[in-house]
Image 1 (cartoon, rainbow, N blue to C red):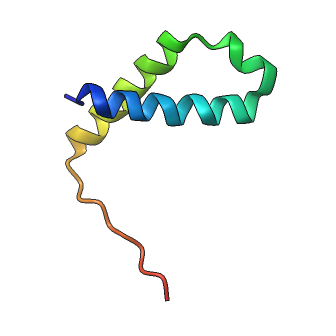
Image 2: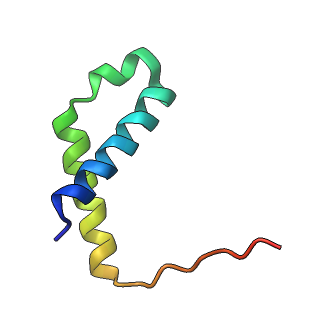
Length: 58
């Protein structure tokens, strides 16, 4: 399960993206729904247990 710090960071990033993309309409998406989505995504990432691969920049 994701830590509260991970959920908070994911929420902050998701809310910023939603606000930038949706503008005024972003207010129609409740914070609780964004937090639930972040929790689902973080749990799915944890379950896949796939190591992160860093892209090399040449």
